[in-house]
Image (cartoon, rainbow, N blue to C red; front, side, top):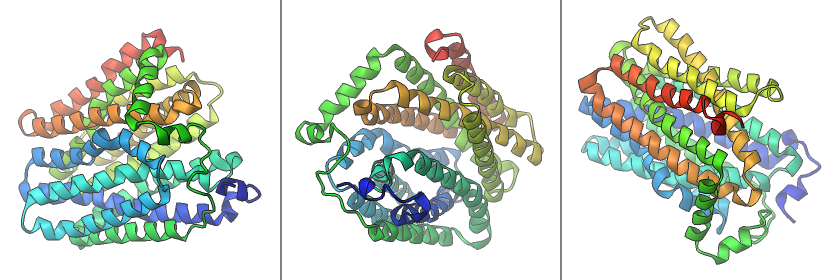
Length: 409
């Protein structure tokens, strides 16, 4: 009997395993927001280099490209909770060491950022894979909604708090809090009462996965993606625009550092995007039956492209924050529509592999964008780069809007 079967009678609020998961992840993600501000700020203040800042941000993405598909295969073959707890312990130790290593070498900070991200690669898909083991199938959609809402709340509160902690307390304090949050996440995972056997997986292809090479499964997913016209066209579009989206993140950080006096402004920028994302998620949920996914994806990207270029012309902080709210709304409409499209078009026994392949491709494109923005910032300037970033999103979106394979889904 699976845990999901044992909890079928209980609503989410009375499901102690789910309450523990949400609570632990809320605290852990709040700590993550501190680290995502503290890491680049530490590098920027130490090296005064936009290139180095871009590199450390890209290092958070590279492990997903290298190990994302592999992590999904591993999590289907071993105890998922054990892997997640090990990842939390590893991440806590790594981020706790950052301030001490930074006193001696900036190269060591890059290495710690990379290793922290490597551990996260094995945690994030584990979280999504573990959820069906702790809630019943009829509660799964609500459970995902609660987790997503919680994640966006931490975007709003966490980034705003991060800016003040890094600015007014210390970078060391930010990393210490993040390390403690990983410890709390590990404790909540261990406190769960899971009653399934290692072989008791609801995924019907799990037994086959354990007796065939992981790479054979990955190749099968790639083959399906290549031969499905709409999925292939959508994947090409998303990979193309992700380069521009990836470039936008370090540009906003550098904009905050150079024009608006540091991490406080960056925290508010990220919080504004998160506010918009929540608004957009509610809107697309309410209008889901009235909008076509392809139109929502392409028009959302068109708005994002325009909004990514706006910081080149807008210098007042409040109008800039309003622009970021609109950007977040468009981002939510685009992403929710894409997720729904993939979930409905891909057979159940291929979804994990398709998501793994797409995740690897998009994270690779994101890393390219981050590195390019960091490398060009010193020579090209932030204003022209924001325009280029917007065009990198807008042009593929317009092409996609004109393509029936992308638009008519």
